[in-house]
Image: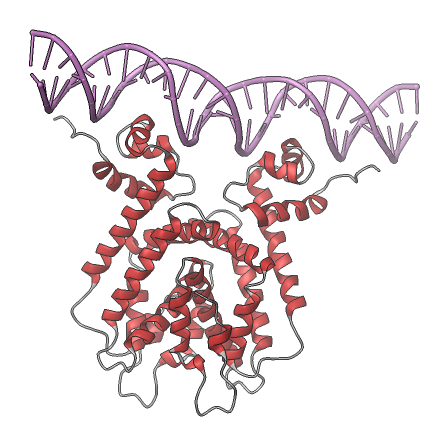
Length: 198
Length: 198
DNA sequence: TTCCTCTTGTAGCGACTGCTACATTAAACT
DNA sequence: AGTTTAATGTAGCAGTCGCTACAAGAGGAA
């Protein structure tokens, strides 16, 4: 059984898998090629050089992330903003999302350093996440657009604090915020339980 | 004029300066040594190996950050939480803090990947920032401890969105939050003006 | 067939990586 | 002074980096 001809399209999934597991920082051509069952020679042949390979790969990964969000888009909306936050944070604790998250910070770092392709991919992923978040907002929310942006800010801050060992700080912050459940509201408040552990 | 004997203490400031400018990712011994006016040979001699060099360097940089916060600790507290956020975000737009911020995301990424020394430094920096933030909370704040943690989460989320080209998302989110200024409050609301530009 | 283009393998280049062996100088102790 | 120890320079090793020159196969077109 002969393998198909190589192309960017057949290469990218395997490259993405390797990068999701081993990161972008130490990603060099020969290990990448091995993961895709080829040689560095062919990677350069098909992508021209490493820089555009990484750019294309980031774009592809952003696409994966987008479709992951699509499939994760349950039909039932959250009832409160806090439930919305809790859902997303608990979803972010799934193993697949963990790998994404680890990679995500490398993408952010690359963005900050101005590496080619990073900012575009990051922006695309966040735009998609924002759109997804808007669909998850409570139906009776007074300001779904602004609220989604607010929740996004809070969520990203929480994720960052979590990765540097300050999950507890974020949790206590959320509990002290208006997201911890308005006592005058008739919705149940279980944010504490759904927040990430220390 | 003969240069002083080398030691970790005399080396670290110059190494830190180089890393703040060029990043941790591509930091290899020879450029680092050149920036410190020595040879890679001596870096290994004084630090043992690269890994502990980076660890020590991260610790040293965390120390720099801590003292930068100390000197930035004005005696006057903010009057409202939103003013507190606005101050910190505007402070983060100073050039020196910009360099820190770019480096910061590399530290977060290293934390997430489990690189040795990264998480410790990151945790230390965030702990320090949290303590500093508590001192900046409004005097009449009903919950300074919880509020500081909440603001910290929001601030970090805002910074992240800013570096990936979503400063506008964060700004709109903050404007839609309870931090945008309570109309029933007697404090002035100028958060919009102090938020980062698009 | 003959030719031509696309795709792939082999081999290697020059630069760089972290690190070390060896020798030398400089300072400090006895 | 003599001895010992710490600090530094020179040179280089084995490995990896991105990338390329060259040639060989493969498939279609004439």
